Length: 370
Image (cartoon, rainbow, N blue to C red):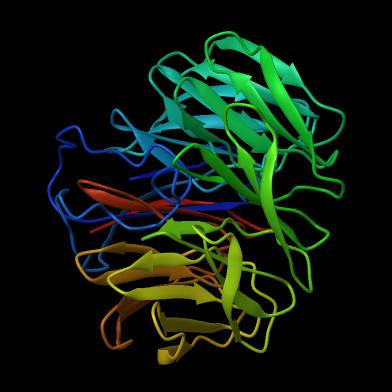
C-alpha cells in the first residue's frame, strides 16, 4: 500500500511487530513515561520485531518529533507545521492540525488530550480523537521541549529560558521557573520532582508543585537530551561528551563517563545498564553500578536517536537512516534496515509495533515493519 501526499520531503518510519491489538498498553509520551526510562515496563507484554517491511505512507516535510502511541493512533509533528494523527494499523492519516511553524516537540497524550509545542512560540492542547484545539499557551519564544504530563499538569521547557507548568484541562499557567539559557530538552518526572537541563549546562531538579529549585548540577556543556530516572539515580548526557550519574537522595553527581563525543541521545536505563548514543555514531552500554563499559556498537554516523527497549532488544536510528535492532545483553546486531533518511527521533513501542519518525530532506514515509 502506498499513498503520496504532494512533494515528499520527510521520512516518518514506523516499525511494527507482533500481533495487532493494543490491550490497553500505550506509549503516550516521549521515552514511554514520565521517568523517561525508554523501556517497556516489566509487567507489560514484550514484543520482538523481525524487520520485514509491510507498508509505507508518505508525508511532505522532515519529521523531528518522536511519536506517541495511544488508542490505536500514532501522533507526531512535522517541519511543515502540521501535527498528525495516523492509524497505527493502516498508516492512514486520521486528522491534521496546522500550526504557524515547524514542530520538533514530541507529543504527550493525557486522557483525551494530546499536547505539544511548536516553533511559533505556542504550546497546544488538542482533542486526541478529532484534532480540535482545546487551548493554546503562548510563551516568549519557540518550544522544542517534549512535555511530561502528571497529576493533571503538563511540564515543558521553552527556548525563552523558562520551564513551565500548565493545567492540562484549562491551559492555565501554574508556575514558570527561570532557567536562564534556552531549554531545548525535555523533562523527566519522578516523586514530585521535574528534572530538566538547559543550554548553559545546568541540570535542574524543580519541585513539581511549587516550581521552586530543589538542587542543580552544572556540567561542561549544553544539555539538550532528556534525562532518565531509575532506581534512585538520574542519568543524563551533555555536549561535553560525558554521561553523568547523579544520586537523587544526596542531590549530587557521583560518576561521569567520557564517551569522546557530544551526547544528544537520551539515555535508556534498564536491566542494570544505561544505553545511549553519541555524535561519533557509537551506541554504549554502561554498567549502571560501576560505570564500566559493557559493550559498544559502531554505526558510522551520529546517533541522536534515543533507544527503546522491548524483549531484550534495543531499537534506535542514526543519521545514515539506518534502524538497528541490537541485543541488549551483548550488543550483537540482530538486524539493520537502511531507509535513506536521517533518524534523530526516539522509537515508540506498543503492543503490535515500534514507531520511529525520521527526517530525509527529499522524501518521507511511514513504514510498517513486522
